[in-house]
Length: 445
Image 1 (cartoon, rainbow, N blue to C red):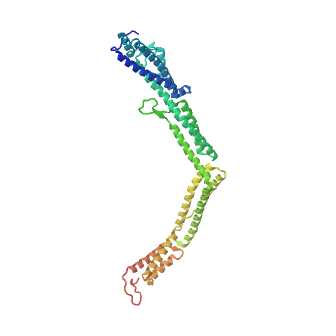
Image 2: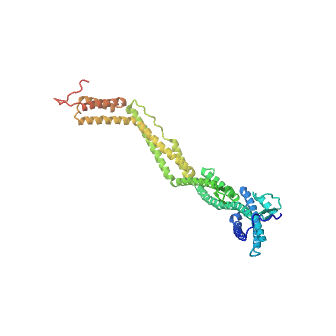
Image 3: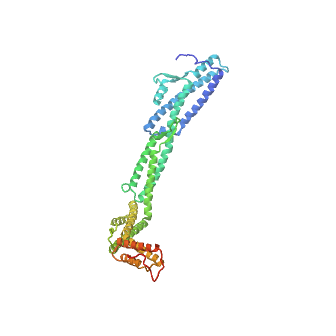
Protein backbone atom coordinates (compact mmCIF):
# COMPACT_ATOMS: atom_id res chain seq x y z
CA UNK A 1 0.00 0.00 0.00
CA UNK A 2 1.41 3.47 -0.97
CA UNK A 3 1.67 6.45 1.36
CA UNK A 4 -1.06 8.94 0.56
CA UNK A 5 -0.24 11.53 3.24
CA UNK A 6 -2.13 12.44 6.35
CA UNK A 7 -5.93 12.66 6.11
CA UNK A 8 -7.03 16.26 6.51
CA UNK A 9 -5.04 18.98 8.28
CA UNK A 10 -1.97 17.96 10.23
CA UNK A 11 -2.66 17.77 13.95
CA UNK A 12 -0.77 20.04 16.29
CA UNK A 13 1.00 18.80 19.43
CA UNK A 14 -1.96 19.47 21.75
CA UNK A 15 -4.33 17.61 19.45
CA UNK A 16 -1.92 14.70 19.28
CA UNK A 17 -1.53 14.57 23.04
CA UNK A 18 -5.28 14.69 23.58
CA UNK A 19 -5.83 11.96 20.97
CA UNK A 20 -3.16 9.76 22.54
CA UNK A 21 -4.69 10.27 26.00
CA UNK A 22 -8.14 9.36 24.71
CA UNK A 23 -6.89 6.33 22.81
CA UNK A 24 -4.89 5.24 25.83
CA UNK A 25 -7.96 5.40 28.03
CA UNK A 26 -9.93 3.43 25.44
CA UNK A 27 -7.13 0.89 25.25
CA UNK A 28 -7.19 0.44 29.01
CA UNK A 29 -10.98 0.10 29.07
CA UNK A 30 -10.97 -2.42 26.22
CA UNK A 31 -8.21 -4.44 27.86
CA UNK A 32 -10.11 -4.51 31.15
CA UNK A 33 -13.28 -5.63 29.37
CA UNK A 34 -11.48 -8.34 27.41
CA UNK A 35 -9.82 -9.72 30.53
CA UNK A 36 -13.16 -9.68 32.37
CA UNK A 37 -14.75 -11.52 29.45
CA UNK A 38 -11.89 -13.99 29.48
CA UNK A 39 -12.42 -14.69 33.19
CA UNK A 40 -16.24 -14.65 33.08
CA UNK A 41 -17.75 -17.75 34.68
CA UNK A 42 -20.24 -18.04 31.84
CA UNK A 43 -17.48 -18.17 29.24
CA UNK A 44 -15.65 -20.91 31.14
CA UNK A 45 -18.89 -22.91 31.41
CA UNK A 46 -19.54 -22.51 27.70
CA UNK A 47 -16.03 -23.69 26.87
CA UNK A 48 -16.45 -26.84 28.97
CA UNK A 49 -20.05 -27.70 28.13
CA UNK A 50 -21.38 -30.13 25.53
CA UNK A 51 -23.58 -27.66 23.70
CA UNK A 52 -26.43 -28.26 21.27
CA UNK A 53 -28.87 -26.28 19.18
CA UNK A 54 -28.86 -22.51 19.05
CA UNK A 55 -26.30 -22.23 21.87
CA UNK A 56 -23.80 -24.38 19.98
CA UNK A 57 -24.18 -22.20 16.89
CA UNK A 58 -23.98 -18.87 18.69
CA UNK A 59 -21.08 -19.92 20.91
CA UNK A 60 -19.06 -21.04 17.86
CA UNK A 61 -19.64 -17.57 16.39
CA UNK A 62 -18.84 -15.90 19.73
CA UNK A 63 -15.57 -17.84 20.10
CA UNK A 64 -14.50 -16.66 16.65
CA UNK A 65 -15.49 -13.10 17.62
CA UNK A 66 -13.41 -13.29 20.79
CA UNK A 67 -10.41 -14.55 18.80
CA UNK A 68 -10.86 -11.70 16.35
CA UNK A 69 -11.21 -9.27 19.26
CA UNK A 70 -7.79 -10.19 20.59
CA UNK A 71 -6.32 -9.94 17.08
CA UNK A 72 -7.75 -6.45 16.70
CA UNK A 73 -6.66 -5.52 20.20
CA UNK A 74 -3.07 -6.61 19.54
CA UNK A 75 -3.03 -4.55 16.33
CA UNK A 76 -4.54 -1.61 18.20
CA UNK A 77 -1.92 -1.98 20.94
CA UNK A 78 0.92 -2.04 18.43
CA UNK A 79 -0.41 1.02 16.61
CA UNK A 80 -0.85 2.95 19.86
CA UNK A 81 2.65 1.98 21.01
CA UNK A 82 4.10 3.12 17.67
CA UNK A 83 2.34 6.48 17.95
CA UNK A 84 3.60 6.95 21.50
CA UNK A 85 7.17 6.12 20.38
CA UNK A 86 7.01 8.77 17.67
CA UNK A 87 5.63 11.34 20.10
CA UNK A 88 8.32 10.55 22.65
CA UNK A 89 11.23 11.11 20.22
CA UNK A 90 11.45 14.75 21.13
CA UNK A 91 9.68 17.12 23.46
CA UNK A 92 8.58 19.40 20.63
CA UNK A 93 7.52 17.19 17.73
CA UNK A 94 8.66 18.26 14.27
CA UNK A 95 6.37 18.88 11.34
CA UNK A 96 7.30 15.48 9.92
CA UNK A 97 6.53 13.77 13.27
CA UNK A 98 3.14 15.49 13.48
CA UNK A 99 2.30 14.47 9.90
CA UNK A 100 3.23 10.86 10.69
CA UNK A 101 1.21 10.96 13.95
CA UNK A 102 -1.78 12.41 12.09
CA UNK A 103 -1.60 9.51 9.65
CA UNK A 104 -1.36 7.01 12.52
CA UNK A 105 -4.12 8.53 14.62
CA UNK A 106 -6.60 9.47 11.92
CA UNK A 107 -5.79 7.42 8.85
CA UNK A 108 -6.27 3.75 8.08
CA UNK A 109 -2.92 2.98 9.61
CA UNK A 110 -3.70 -0.29 11.41
CA UNK A 111 -3.12 -3.36 9.26
CA UNK A 112 -4.46 -6.79 10.24
CA UNK A 113 -3.27 -9.88 8.38
CA UNK A 114 -5.96 -11.20 6.06
CA UNK A 115 -5.57 -14.82 7.15
CA UNK A 116 -6.24 -13.92 10.78
CA UNK A 117 -8.91 -11.27 10.34
CA UNK A 118 -10.69 -12.84 7.40
CA UNK A 119 -10.97 -16.36 8.81
CA UNK A 120 -12.09 -15.19 12.24
CA UNK A 121 -14.53 -12.69 10.79
CA UNK A 122 -16.09 -15.29 8.53
CA UNK A 123 -16.57 -17.65 11.47
CA UNK A 124 -17.98 -14.83 13.56
CA UNK A 125 -20.21 -13.72 10.68
CA UNK A 126 -19.02 -10.15 11.24
CA UNK A 127 -21.06 -7.94 8.91
CA UNK A 128 -18.48 -5.17 8.88
CA UNK A 129 -15.70 -7.09 7.17
CA UNK A 130 -15.45 -7.70 3.46
CA UNK A 131 -12.99 -9.46 1.26
CA UNK A 132 -12.01 -12.36 3.51
CA UNK A 133 -9.59 -13.47 0.79
CA UNK A 134 -7.53 -10.27 0.93
CA UNK A 135 -3.95 -10.45 2.19
CA UNK A 136 -4.55 -7.71 4.76
CA UNK A 137 -7.17 -5.27 6.12
CA UNK A 138 -6.52 -1.67 7.07
CA UNK A 139 -8.48 0.29 9.67
CA UNK A 140 -8.29 3.58 11.42
CA UNK A 141 -7.95 3.41 15.19
CA UNK A 142 -11.47 4.83 15.61
CA UNK A 143 -12.95 2.26 13.21
CA UNK A 144 -11.05 -0.50 14.99
CA UNK A 145 -12.47 0.58 18.35
CA UNK A 146 -15.99 0.52 16.88
CA UNK A 147 -15.43 -2.96 15.48
CA UNK A 148 -14.10 -4.21 18.80
CA UNK A 149 -17.08 -2.73 20.63
CA UNK A 150 -19.48 -4.51 18.26
CA UNK A 151 -17.71 -7.86 18.61
CA UNK A 152 -17.45 -7.47 22.37
CA UNK A 153 -21.16 -6.69 22.75
CA UNK A 154 -22.26 -9.69 20.67
CA UNK A 155 -19.84 -12.05 22.45
CA UNK A 156 -20.77 -10.75 25.89
CA UNK A 157 -24.46 -11.17 25.08
CA UNK A 158 -23.94 -14.90 24.47
CA UNK A 159 -21.87 -15.34 27.63
CA UNK A 160 -24.13 -13.30 29.92
CA UNK A 161 -27.33 -14.85 28.56
CA UNK A 162 -26.08 -18.42 28.95
CA UNK A 163 -24.79 -17.66 32.44
CA UNK A 164 -28.12 -16.09 33.45
CA UNK A 165 -30.09 -19.14 32.31
CA UNK A 166 -27.65 -21.55 33.98
CA UNK A 167 -27.78 -19.52 37.18
CA UNK A 168 -31.57 -19.46 37.29
CA UNK A 169 -33.18 -22.54 35.81
CA UNK A 170 -31.13 -25.64 36.77
CA UNK A 171 -31.18 -24.74 40.49
CA UNK A 172 -34.93 -24.16 40.39
CA UNK A 173 -35.45 -27.40 38.49
CA UNK A 174 -33.37 -29.27 41.07
CA UNK A 175 -35.43 -27.82 43.93
CA UNK A 176 -38.65 -28.78 42.18
CA UNK A 177 -37.25 -32.26 41.48
CA UNK A 178 -36.44 -32.68 45.19
CA UNK A 179 -40.00 -31.66 46.07
CA UNK A 180 -41.21 -34.06 43.41
CA UNK A 181 -39.32 -36.95 45.05
CA UNK A 182 -40.83 -36.15 48.45
CA UNK A 183 -44.28 -36.05 46.89
CA UNK A 184 -43.66 -39.39 45.14
CA UNK A 185 -42.71 -41.05 48.43
CA UNK A 186 -45.77 -39.62 50.15
CA UNK A 187 -47.99 -40.67 47.25
CA UNK A 188 -46.60 -44.20 47.37
CA UNK A 189 -47.34 -44.42 51.10
CA UNK A 190 -51.05 -43.76 50.49
CA UNK A 191 -51.34 -46.00 47.44
CA UNK A 192 -51.19 -43.33 44.74
CA UNK A 193 -49.23 -45.15 42.05
CA UNK A 194 -48.90 -44.91 38.26
CA UNK A 195 -51.58 -46.89 36.49
CA UNK A 196 -53.79 -46.94 39.60
CA UNK A 197 -54.48 -43.25 40.21
CA UNK A 198 -54.38 -40.21 37.86
CA UNK A 199 -52.14 -38.34 40.31
CA UNK A 200 -49.61 -41.18 40.08
CA UNK A 201 -49.59 -40.86 36.29
CA UNK A 202 -49.12 -37.09 36.63
CA UNK A 203 -46.08 -37.61 38.87
CA UNK A 204 -44.48 -39.86 36.26
CA UNK A 205 -45.12 -37.32 33.50
CA UNK A 206 -43.73 -34.44 35.61
CA UNK A 207 -40.62 -36.50 36.39
CA UNK A 208 -39.97 -37.17 32.69
CA UNK A 209 -40.58 -33.54 31.75
CA UNK A 210 -38.26 -32.13 34.43
CA UNK A 211 -35.48 -34.58 33.52
CA UNK A 212 -35.73 -33.62 29.85
CA UNK A 213 -36.01 -29.90 30.68
CA UNK A 214 -32.83 -29.95 32.77
CA UNK A 215 -30.88 -31.69 30.03
CA UNK A 216 -32.05 -29.15 27.46
CA UNK A 217 -31.28 -26.17 29.71
CA UNK A 218 -27.75 -27.43 30.41
CA UNK A 219 -26.92 -28.15 26.77
CA UNK A 220 -28.82 -25.31 25.08
CA UNK A 221 -29.38 -22.44 27.56
CA UNK A 222 -29.91 -19.80 24.87
CA UNK A 223 -33.06 -21.63 23.74
CA UNK A 224 -34.56 -20.65 27.11
CA UNK A 225 -34.05 -16.91 26.88
CA UNK A 226 -36.70 -14.28 26.24
CA UNK A 227 -35.14 -11.09 24.95
CA UNK A 228 -36.55 -7.86 26.35
CA UNK A 229 -38.57 -5.86 23.86
CA UNK A 230 -36.55 -2.97 22.45
CA UNK A 231 -33.41 -3.86 24.42
CA UNK A 232 -30.05 -4.07 22.63
CA UNK A 233 -27.88 -4.31 25.76
CA UNK A 234 -25.97 -7.58 26.27
CA UNK A 235 -28.08 -9.95 28.38
CA UNK A 236 -31.21 -7.85 28.08
CA UNK A 237 -34.11 -10.16 28.85
CA UNK A 238 -35.02 -12.99 31.19
CA UNK A 239 -34.93 -16.81 31.37
CA UNK A 240 -37.95 -18.51 29.81
CA UNK A 241 -39.60 -20.42 32.69
CA UNK A 242 -42.81 -21.40 30.85
CA UNK A 243 -42.26 -25.15 31.01
CA UNK A 244 -40.92 -25.00 34.57
CA UNK A 245 -43.87 -22.93 35.77
CA UNK A 246 -46.35 -25.30 34.13
CA UNK A 247 -44.83 -28.35 35.81
CA UNK A 248 -44.62 -26.54 39.16
CA UNK A 249 -48.37 -25.86 38.95
CA UNK A 250 -49.02 -29.47 37.98
CA UNK A 251 -47.01 -30.70 40.98
CA UNK A 252 -48.97 -28.35 43.25
CA UNK A 253 -52.20 -29.87 41.93
CA UNK A 254 -50.87 -33.36 42.67
CA UNK A 255 -49.87 -32.29 46.20
CA UNK A 256 -53.41 -31.08 46.81
CA UNK A 257 -54.72 -34.42 45.60
CA UNK A 258 -52.35 -36.28 47.94
CA UNK A 259 -53.44 -34.02 50.80
CA UNK A 260 -57.05 -34.97 50.06
CA UNK A 261 -56.10 -38.65 50.20
CA UNK A 262 -54.26 -38.08 53.50
CA UNK A 263 -57.33 -36.33 54.87
CA UNK A 264 -59.39 -39.34 53.90
CA UNK A 265 -56.98 -41.63 55.70
CA UNK A 266 -57.15 -39.52 58.85
CA UNK A 267 -60.92 -39.19 59.13
CA UNK A 268 -62.20 -42.06 56.98
CA UNK A 269 -64.01 -43.81 59.85
CA UNK A 270 -65.74 -40.61 60.94
CA UNK A 271 -66.90 -39.89 57.41
CA UNK A 272 -68.13 -43.46 56.97
CA UNK A 273 -70.11 -43.25 60.22
CA UNK A 274 -71.65 -39.98 59.07
CA UNK A 275 -72.55 -41.52 55.73
CA UNK A 276 -74.23 -44.50 57.40
CA UNK A 277 -76.19 -42.10 59.62
CA UNK A 278 -77.39 -39.99 56.66
CA UNK A 279 -78.46 -43.06 54.68
CA UNK A 280 -80.16 -44.50 57.77
CA UNK A 281 -82.12 -41.26 58.24
CA UNK A 282 -83.08 -41.38 54.57
CA UNK A 283 -84.31 -44.98 54.99
CA UNK A 284 -86.35 -44.06 58.09
CA UNK A 285 -87.82 -41.06 56.32
CA UNK A 286 -88.84 -43.22 53.34
CA UNK A 287 -90.34 -45.80 55.71
CA UNK A 288 -92.28 -43.03 57.41
CA UNK A 289 -93.44 -41.81 53.99
CA UNK A 290 -94.67 -45.32 53.07
CA UNK A 291 -96.59 -45.60 56.35
CA UNK A 292 -98.01 -42.11 55.87
CA UNK A 293 -99.11 -43.03 52.34
CA UNK A 294 -101.17 -45.90 53.65
CA UNK A 295 -102.72 -43.60 56.24
CA UNK A 296 -103.54 -40.99 53.62
CA UNK A 297 -105.10 -43.53 51.31
CA UNK A 298 -107.27 -44.72 54.21
CA UNK A 299 -108.28 -41.28 55.52
CA UNK A 300 -108.39 -39.02 52.47
CA UNK A 301 -110.70 -39.60 49.53
CA UNK A 302 -110.28 -38.56 45.91
CA UNK A 303 -106.59 -37.62 46.27
CA UNK A 304 -103.61 -38.59 44.13
CA UNK A 305 -100.91 -39.82 46.52
CA UNK A 306 -97.38 -40.19 45.08
CA UNK A 307 -95.72 -43.60 45.18
CA UNK A 308 -92.82 -43.88 47.64
CA UNK A 309 -89.67 -45.57 46.28
CA UNK A 310 -87.69 -48.16 48.17
CA UNK A 311 -84.34 -47.65 49.93
CA UNK A 312 -81.30 -46.75 47.75
CA UNK A 313 -79.62 -50.17 47.45
CA UNK A 314 -76.96 -48.84 45.06
CA UNK A 315 -75.75 -46.37 47.68
CA UNK A 316 -75.64 -49.09 50.32
CA UNK A 317 -73.51 -51.21 47.99
CA UNK A 318 -71.15 -48.29 47.37
CA UNK A 319 -70.95 -47.67 51.11
CA UNK A 320 -69.96 -51.30 51.62
CA UNK A 321 -67.30 -50.87 48.91
CA UNK A 322 -65.97 -47.76 50.71
CA UNK A 323 -65.71 -49.72 53.96
CA UNK A 324 -63.80 -52.43 52.09
CA UNK A 325 -61.38 -49.84 50.70
CA UNK A 326 -60.77 -48.56 54.21
CA UNK A 327 -60.06 -52.05 55.58
CA UNK A 328 -57.45 -52.61 52.87
CA UNK A 329 -55.97 -49.07 53.17
CA UNK A 330 -56.81 -48.24 49.56
CA UNK A 331 -57.00 -44.54 50.36
CA UNK A 332 -56.56 -43.36 46.78
CA UNK A 333 -59.70 -45.30 45.81
CA UNK A 334 -61.58 -44.33 48.95
CA UNK A 335 -61.02 -40.56 48.49
CA UNK A 336 -63.08 -40.01 45.30
CA UNK A 337 -65.69 -42.60 46.37
CA UNK A 338 -66.34 -40.84 49.69
CA UNK A 339 -66.66 -37.46 47.99
CA UNK A 340 -69.20 -38.90 45.57
CA UNK A 341 -71.09 -40.78 48.29
CA UNK A 342 -71.33 -37.75 50.57
CA UNK A 343 -73.05 -35.74 47.88
CA UNK A 344 -75.33 -38.62 46.86
CA UNK A 345 -76.27 -39.35 50.48
CA UNK A 346 -77.29 -35.72 51.08
CA UNK A 347 -79.31 -35.80 47.86
CA UNK A 348 -80.99 -39.04 48.94
CA UNK A 349 -81.96 -37.62 52.34
CA UNK A 350 -83.39 -34.53 50.66
CA UNK A 351 -85.35 -36.73 48.23
CA UNK A 352 -86.75 -38.80 51.11
CA UNK A 353 -87.87 -35.66 52.94
CA UNK A 354 -89.48 -34.28 49.81
CA UNK A 355 -91.26 -37.61 49.31
CA UNK A 356 -92.60 -37.54 52.89
CA UNK A 357 -93.77 -33.95 52.43
CA UNK A 358 -95.55 -34.80 49.17
CA UNK A 359 -97.22 -37.89 50.68
CA UNK A 360 -98.44 -36.14 53.83
CA UNK A 361 -99.64 -33.02 52.02
CA UNK A 362 -103.33 -34.12 52.11
CA UNK A 363 -103.09 -34.69 55.87
CA UNK A 364 -101.53 -31.26 56.25
CA UNK A 365 -104.39 -29.74 54.24
CA UNK A 366 -106.95 -31.54 56.44
CA UNK A 367 -105.14 -30.34 59.60
CA UNK A 368 -105.14 -26.80 58.27
CA UNK A 369 -108.92 -26.96 57.57
CA UNK A 370 -109.57 -28.37 61.05
CA UNK A 371 -107.53 -25.58 62.61
CA UNK A 372 -109.33 -22.93 60.59
CA UNK A 373 -112.73 -24.35 61.55
CA UNK A 374 -111.92 -24.39 65.28
CA UNK A 375 -110.41 -20.89 65.09
CA UNK A 376 -113.61 -19.45 63.65
CA UNK A 377 -115.70 -21.32 66.23
CA UNK A 378 -113.63 -19.71 69.01
CA UNK A 379 -114.01 -16.29 67.38
CA UNK A 380 -117.78 -16.71 67.16
CA UNK A 381 -117.90 -17.74 70.81
CA UNK A 382 -115.99 -14.60 71.85
CA UNK A 383 -118.72 -12.52 70.23
CA UNK A 384 -121.53 -14.40 71.99
CA UNK A 385 -122.80 -16.21 68.89
CA UNK A 386 -121.78 -19.76 69.80
CA UNK A 387 -125.41 -20.83 70.27
CA UNK A 388 -126.60 -19.55 66.92
CA UNK A 389 -128.50 -22.51 65.38
CA UNK A 390 -127.46 -21.72 61.83
CA UNK A 391 -123.76 -21.53 62.73
CA UNK A 392 -124.06 -24.71 64.80
CA UNK A 393 -125.59 -26.48 61.85
CA UNK A 394 -122.84 -25.41 59.44
CA UNK A 395 -120.11 -26.11 61.97
CA UNK A 396 -121.39 -29.64 62.59
CA UNK A 397 -121.59 -30.30 58.83
CA UNK A 398 -118.01 -29.19 58.28
CA UNK A 399 -116.77 -31.07 61.34
CA UNK A 400 -118.40 -34.33 60.27
CA UNK A 401 -116.66 -34.10 56.90
CA UNK A 402 -113.24 -33.30 58.39
CA UNK A 403 -113.37 -35.95 61.10
CA UNK A 404 -114.77 -38.72 58.96
CA UNK A 405 -112.78 -41.24 56.96
CA UNK A 406 -112.19 -41.14 54.12
CA UNK A 407 -112.35 -37.36 54.05
CA UNK A 408 -113.16 -35.60 50.82
CA UNK A 409 -110.92 -32.56 51.09
CA UNK A 410 -112.64 -30.66 48.31
CA UNK A 411 -116.11 -31.01 49.85
CA UNK A 412 -114.78 -30.45 53.37
CA UNK A 413 -113.01 -27.30 52.25
CA UNK A 414 -116.27 -25.96 50.80
CA UNK A 415 -118.08 -26.73 54.08
CA UNK A 416 -115.46 -24.86 56.09
CA UNK A 417 -115.73 -21.93 53.69
CA UNK A 418 -119.50 -21.83 54.09
CA UNK A 419 -119.11 -21.77 57.88
CA UNK A 420 -116.59 -18.94 57.62
CA UNK A 421 -118.89 -16.93 55.38
CA UNK A 422 -121.86 -17.41 57.69
CA UNK A 423 -119.81 -16.41 60.72
CA UNK A 424 -118.50 -13.34 58.90
CA UNK A 425 -122.03 -12.25 58.01
CA UNK A 426 -123.14 -12.54 61.60
CA UNK A 427 -120.10 -10.73 62.95
CA UNK A 428 -120.55 -7.79 60.57
CA UNK A 429 -124.38 -7.52 60.72
CA UNK A 430 -125.99 -4.77 62.94
CA UNK A 431 -126.90 -6.08 66.39
CA UNK A 432 -130.63 -5.92 67.46
CA UNK A 433 -131.50 -6.24 71.17
CA UNK A 434 -132.70 -9.74 71.89
CA UNK A 435 -136.28 -10.28 73.15
CA UNK A 436 -136.82 -13.72 74.50
CA UNK A 437 -133.90 -15.30 72.70
CA UNK A 438 -131.66 -15.05 69.71
CA UNK A 439 -133.29 -13.60 66.65
CA UNK A 440 -132.77 -15.11 63.25
CA UNK A 441 -131.43 -12.32 61.01
CA UNK A 442 -131.02 -14.39 57.94
CA UNK A 443 -134.55 -15.34 57.16
CA UNK A 444 -135.37 -18.72 55.87
CA UNK A 445 -132.47 -20.51 54.33
